[in-house]
Image (cartoon, rainbow, N blue to C red; front, side, top):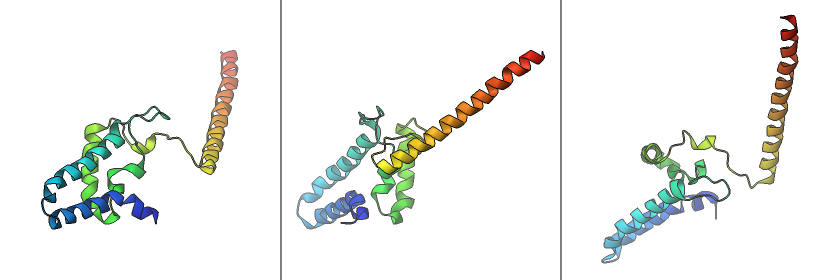
Amino acid sequence: VSSSLLQWMPFFVMCFSTIMAFIVPDSINFLPTLLSGMYVSWLYLRYFQKNPLTGLKGDPSDDFSFPSLFPDAMRPVTDPVANLFDRMLCARSKPSEIALPVTDPTKASRRRERGERVLEERMAADHAADAEAPAHSAED
């Protein structure tokens, strides 16, 4: 099964349930409950569930955004809904700015190496600034 099919599983379940609600007698009564239950479940997981690994509330990753649960052709419809709820429920400026734990060892290694380089550059810059400071004070 391809990952895009699994990624859009909520969309397929919603479509299937909607079609079945009009075919099976008396099941239309359950359709609003099913659709709102799926949406409320996503809202809880996205914004309120506490992650024990990061200590953050919700899942701010782009992979779990509301539009990612639907095919790309539906983005013009789903993006405004997602933006509305982001503004209402979320204090963070952008989900991509928050660092999440990485489970892939190669990505983790690359992040670690990049972090070490940045740290070394900052330490070198601080050391150079410290070396220049006494020279300026000796001239005064």
